[in-house]
Picture 1: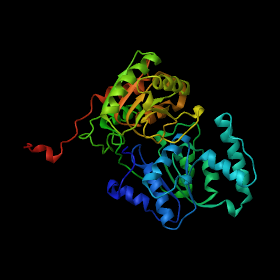
Picture 2: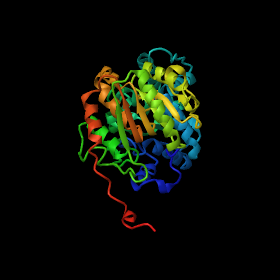
Picture 3: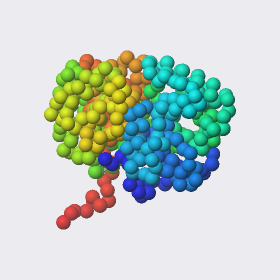
Picture 4: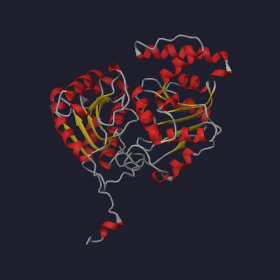
Length: 386
């Protein structure tokens, strides 16, 4: 898989600067999907450890991203035991202080109870609980109070985020980090999403042809992998699965050693889709990363990953299939960010499946994909080849 950088030559100048920011002090990094924030987080952790800042922890909001990051540590000089979910970290911290915590049940209730108990522990001011640095991924998904309590357990914090990808109901995380870190460092360019996929994302946010849109800041190489967007409408979920299976079967040959994502807004739909794909001719290439089925390490021999859109935050796929997208309506104020997050998981190929209809903002984005401006030719392409 091409997700992880292989050498310093893979980074642009801004990315290099972000890794090597002063090792003392707090830093907040903001940037669009595909700008390398998750990669940079691991490299920053490696940088700190090698610079003598040894007691560092990388926190993710979700378990799927945690497993993904753990897999990525094989590419960098850092061990995967430094990576934890927020819930896992908080539970272990409480346990180390003789405080039991039950992390089962409704996630929102678990989250509220954890915050309360961490605040009580923080108030005790025990030096033994303070680490050198906490590195925080997907910082936009935390509340201001959660950020404050996390920061209270570290001498310094290094966080990355993007408000456009906030899919939780809470707010205030990035604002709390700005109060601590000062003016954020912004990464403008991204390399993940093809131009047609960028236009879908920009349509969702009503930023088509805007200098603030994803298309304007894209450095994706269309010459190597021309992007494509296609919608499949009027299909039941079972029929959506059938269509997806046929295309994925082809993509497994077209994109060898590349990950393919199959994502749903709703958890129950993800279960149905996972069962259908596992029972199909591509079943031996499928793995699930769904909360109620438990999580496990990413299997490189099973490149087709079934998850929810929320579960796939921080991940990227050469091809992404978004099934059951008619259910976006049910996510209220979060639906646009959820759609944006799902769309921007795709690097080259994006397929959107639904039954009767999708929200107008997503339909606008899909329509805009057909109006993409052709990429400028490479200078080498101007010459006839012998």
